Length: 310
Image (cartoon, helix red, strand yellow):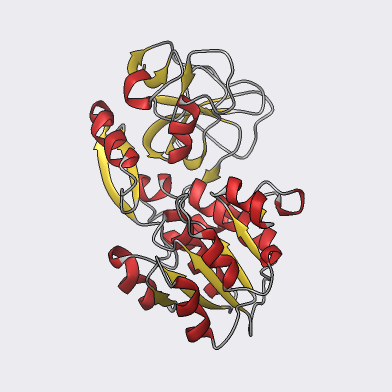
């Protein structure tokens, strides 16, 4: 089968290559899918750079959708041919950017949810859910104002929708690409950059209760902290170095780790009903992975990038 992977650590465009390798077999408690679509993420490139270093070669592609084509022992509730989506394990010699992928966790892909839209969900949904849960946004958040910094990212866009669905007032920083769409969802949108804290404070009429930082690593975290009562009222999913210096929580803080449970399945159903979305910027056939990688690494993908395998 075809698979994207790397045999040494380094710059992704230098080390990733399209290989031919044996199709993996599912182990106990696993299924194998024929991959139809695979999402690309900054985490893929971090793996290439040595994050969670382990035996090489290693695969990339951490979220997939496809159809079940083999079932391991001790697996119930799923049959060959079922459409599914889920996170792809990254510890092995192949991952999700392959013709076939083995999954430890999966969810039924509801009717009406296309493979590309489904593959855009896992990382954004679970990261946004972890962030809001770790931040302490309650399921009923009426009367609470949440500031989402970087709402034009896929995680930020997902978090805005989740917070609004909980009844929170949401102030979101975003660029022009998704500003109007975020307003249509119900968020109050401001520009990011210099003076962002003042814009939040003016719009909110004072400091906001909670803030989730989903923006790419920059120098903006101090601005986010200025918009809240204290640094612990902020959680970042990206700028861990600045978080340590400022006293901001991270998604890996002990009190910010939450079992995703059935959350991905729930949001897949909402997406199928048109009540939730993660914006897809472009999709590419697997053989054009380099163009997709270059766009991703540019820092301005303007939405989720998807590899098509079927």
